[in-house]
Length: 205
Image 1 (cartoon, rainbow, N blue to C red):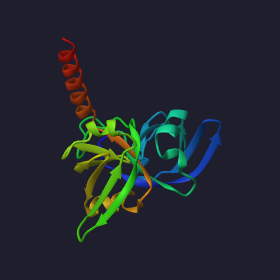
Image 2: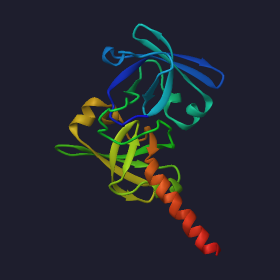
Image 3: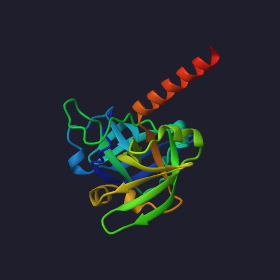
Image 4: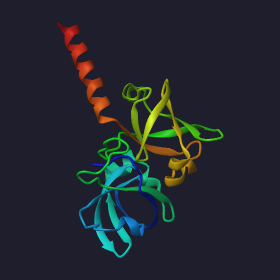
């Protein structure tokens, strides 16, 4: 499990490509290497991945077919960066919200609106059915960053970013047309799905 509080960014040192399979070798920041072991979970742009090899500060992660299909990790190349978060520990302060690291879909950066003290980004989802889980002032994770949803309209939603988030993560470097990973809030999804099942059952009676 993760909290959506990105702990750093890391460059992709190399990419090993095989049929429907890739291995990303990440040059992990020194402060995130403490007690890291093979089998540990680390989120890359919000995607939960498993450590498969550690060679000093070079840490390997395997990307399976589904990960390559659903997330933006498959398009990354050597020299690109990813947001990094180590798995949360029991008793850890949760500054964001609980995340599983299971990406629901990607969204496209539709508009970037700068202002004096923050940055607003508007994202567009691929299908309208996903939008039922994205609520004004609700939680959402974008590339592993826990954020509060702003305006919701059609297939688009916006978030407002403070300087600290822009400094600590990659989101401020996104450009119009870029794809970001989306994890919807599981509690919101559970409530929405439960209400839908209830209403469907009542209509059948």
